[in-house]
Image (tube, rainbow, N blue to C red):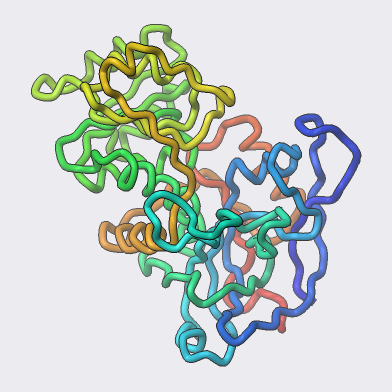
Length: 361
């Protein structure tokens, strides 16, 4: 029988509990007429998976496989021609459902349902197989390995919406600040924006991560632990455009008052997360400069397709910090420890199986 990794329930309060991983057997996949069965080759972690283990994420489930990032090969399909067309192809999975193309948000009244670890969606990618609607897959970019293909999924989608759909400044010659470089979304935002011709500046609490970001195309970077980091960044901006056009932020905290000094009038701050805390300070000075603060979460099915196409055209490669092989609980726990400590630069990947290694159906 196929295997999957889930969280096991133990007693504890949200934020204090840390649910252990458990390897379970699951039913053999049986697709509906419009579905495909994917033998998962690789899956990747996101911060939401850590939050699930800490019961800091809504709808935690103890029976749904973890993880939303996945790549694999279609090994069987339902009877519909649209499903059959995917037979044998290497694919990446759209990490959520309920959001087709509306630029403002999910069309489904029930909202966007992300894969992995919750009661809202029965599919997760930390498993040997996943059954998904044929309409929710894209062909994996040919230049990417299985691990790289999985690594580009959720972070690529989130970064694409933040940079292209929300900032309005993904254009050659514009200046965009990406904060907290080292995390998966921030690195993908850097890669995508740089490929679009943007001058990208970054912040990090690590000098080593700043240097790695420059190797990936960042025009410069500053350490956010320095109290005057915004002044340091001001000195790095080009003389012909001595201001930021947009900020793409995943930390929150004091990013608005700090970046207001750097942004042009009518600039944009896009926030996709608040790792520093659940609130952002929005002072009157920001209002007087007509600076927009925009929230951005995940993205639509259309944006997912657009992002994968762009990655293929530009031959972009996501950065993988570390990977492990197989559904090995001890090894996967090690990846979670990397995330808890914040030591990773890039994605943390589980190579679930290689060709021919998955359980036989």
